[in-house]
Length: 495
Image (tube, rainbow, N blue to C red; front, top):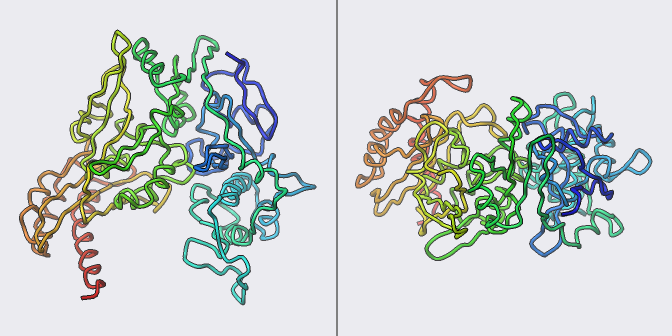
């Protein structure tokens, strides 16, 4: 097995003797690439953003922004990244850097390299399109809608980058002033070539081991023999533990690049989503095929987090406040759990998500098992909604999350599934509320009665995000909010 190394700004750099818990951010800064900054160390500020070469659907490459502070550097073995230093230099600024400077988009400069990398990822997005010849007129920042510029720039590309002193208007101006990459742009030319293939990794430093298996079968055999090993996909949860709580794992198994865990298939009877497929990729490939997920995913943390985070990771932690479990519960999802038997034969079992959680951060997943895929049965419910109550609309953890999936025929509720997060020790189905809805007319009287039931579901607790009383009140109003929306939408449909 060759020596572990990462290609950084076009130069291959060895990982020799690097501690296995080291993040990409610490490794980069230790080698003099100090453009990436540590702001929050938990993926909320984006000051550490870098570009990762990932596979594109056409066989080429996409430049994908990710948080360097959360990614274990050994997860980048054999991969290719670009930091702010690789975009340009003071004598030859990159177009993104140039526009940021022209617009006054940098003050203290601490967040600027991260903004530049996230902005560059959107700059090179293959399907970004806009009316670049559209006259600016009197308004210096014309927009086609509230979240896209005339050049097709999607402001959500910057949703994980925070600025505390410049203000966002100059940064938005810079983003909307970008044209298209020139033909001679080396980072643009790189996109026509394939992204680096995953490489098998097995390193041990100071008694701690990091392994990326070559296949799912290898991963399951290792996990069977080392059931206490830590499984890591996007590392958006574990990276926080490493940074803020000083956690160290004796044995890490990286699974985010295993092909068997990265598929997405839309069939007649179900939709299968690989457990290690990044959430942003799930969102892109589904392309609205599951409206409830299309509503939930943009509210899940930030684009930087979704570029690494996975369904498997969000479910594997067993957290009661994750955003994906309520949505998947409402969709009636099943999980495929897989393991290796003593004869190395791969064993699979399918469980309903509603039976998966057994206690606070506890699940029925056995030692040696991992989540292979999520199955969503079809047909889908006709009326769906995802309500997230948080202190910030984006890039924040839910105080309460509620997902609805209802079928209403002839003005009567014929089926109902409601998933809740943040109101108990585990995500749960609002079974009592579902029973209060099914078979009854979809009218304000039914909704008010069922809302009182919903407000009493779970055992809401008080913490720094919200009081138990507030959580109960949010549950109480969620169904009324959904009803109001359906009434408004029905009036908008022409007779």
